[in-house]
Picture (cartoon, rainbow, N blue to C red):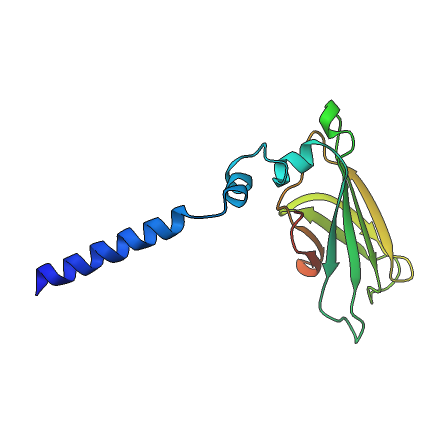
Length: 149
């Protein structure tokens, strides 16, 4: 009985391995090769602007909205990435200061006026890729994004 079970396990393992090796060549290349035209690291290094939509739970019946833009147009020539974070419909009093972080690293703050605000920060020679923007108030996340990609 034990030899029969071992034989079945071996067949399953070989079948699974063969199935995994038959991936589409272009999709596996872009996942493994950072120089593939579709890889996010190449997109970051060639410049352009990446956008991350920010959302959060309603505050006093009003759902806040926002977006983060990472301008990487100077990245390829050794320049800095500029992060701009805009929020609106944030139901807090004027003058409320909201800290902004990129993957839990503080990058600036937004001071609200009429429920809106914007901040810009130079990130240095840094290409965003799978990094998340968070806007907080007293340690609680008010808005967050789905990771730059």
